[in-house]
Image 1: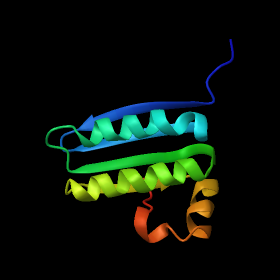
Image 2 (image 1 turned 90 degrees about the vertical axis):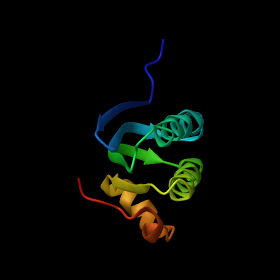
Image 3 (image 1 turned 60 degrees about the vertical axis):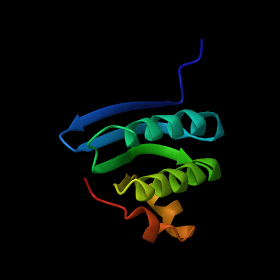
Length: 107
């Protein structure tokens, strides 16, 4: 059996939640990650969601689309949404012109 190409961890502290992602995120992972982020955004009392992608080595356009969806869902719910990207992810976010949307954060 092949090991998954990505992993996640969720840490909650008060009104903040951090979803830590690692590995390769592509079409095969985007639906699961979107569900994970949507679940966190449904948490009662959540004010801030940080997506820590500092250990992500690859993303594709489906993952970028999923991040846009999560950002919009957070905004609609009145919650702060930030991304802490790896250098590779930061470069893709910058190249696609989405830096303003994700408010990349340093952890």
